[in-house]
Amino acid sequence: MPETPLRIVLDARKVNDFGIGTYIRNLVAGLADIDQTDRFILVVDPKVREGLDQLPPNFERVVYEGNPGGVRHAFQYPHFLRGLAADLHHIPLNTVPVFMPKPYVVTVHDMSRLLFVDRRVDYRDELKLHWFRRGLLRADKVISVSKATQRDVMNTLGIPGSRIRMIYNAPDPIFTAQIRGLELDESYRIMERYQINYPFLLYAGNVRPQKNVPRLVEAFAVVRGELADHPIYNDLRLIIIGDEISNTVRQMVARTRMEQAVRFLGFVPINTLRIFYKAAAAFVFPSLYEGFGLPPLEAMACGTPVITSNVSSLPEVVGDAAIIVNPENVFDIARGVREALLDVDLRQRCVLHGIQQVRRFSWRRTAEQVLEVYREVAAAGRTAAPRGASTVAG
Image 1 (cartoon, rainbow, N blue to C red):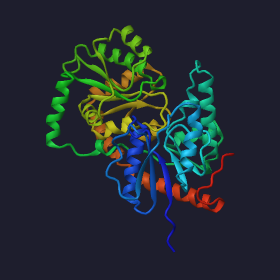
Image 2: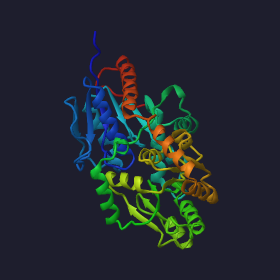
Image 3: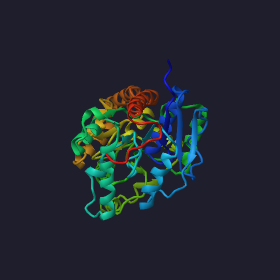
Image 4: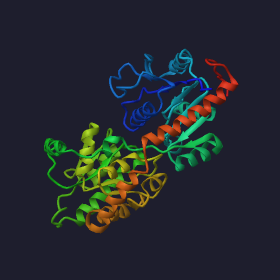
């Protein structure tokens, strides 16, 4: 006898965000590719106009009009979800509504909110962290995006490993697609538009304290000084693509006198980001902490050598395909950059191994494993309560 199709609610309100948006878009696409039976209800923000297009008939978009912040949201959003009468809910964000109806699954992308708490947080931030902990503890299943994140969830919250499923992310398919002839012209136009006619190192990602961008700037200054007379890299630059630059980063640029050599471009469209990856002499990602670390894989998929850290999930994700450095040592970061630029054999090895490493990760495989979690949680929920029922206490 065939199983009854599930009603699965997935919070897709952040589909256009950097990082988490990549997860939502590609997970939904993967699920659409493998599951034409279950009913998926995608909760979207009214401002979202793209990112979830051309889905099969078993996918439905519902708009949540409420304000995503504030105390009222903690009551309104769970009430809205209960009206959808789901067999289970999936929260692919690093936040959980206070009165989230059960059963539900949470994807934890990293534990930085608990491991890197700013000492200046006020009572509202403390309250958010408290509810984040509570939301994970109440979850029927936690999906971690790496073994390192799984360990962090277990060690920080005491959640048993039996309630955590490790399921890797993967790069957006746009980075693994073969480059076409027309794109070579587009690449030239983009480099011309940004007035880039020099070799450059690239960093792409958020610019939070744990991303270690000030040390990256300092290491870049060291390498630029060492290569001042080099025939190719004597005008090496550093390009930073990401969110708003902090005062700490700007102060480091000023202190190292690199104002003319470091460029901040903010966020760029994903097609443009791909071209920057391909054009970079090397991609440098000396983060102090990553739940998974998509940017190094994206760069590898584009055939660019990667320098990254020896901490958290990064060695697990990049394998032997990157140059590994100590992110707390400026001179070791500089050493990694220097090797990536000057050691031709090492550079070629990183490129070849990088392309092979990327093949280990697939959104189809991710979607298959997530669907297994859905069915496991829903089966347990159906034996415990009828459809539409929810448990607030936990």
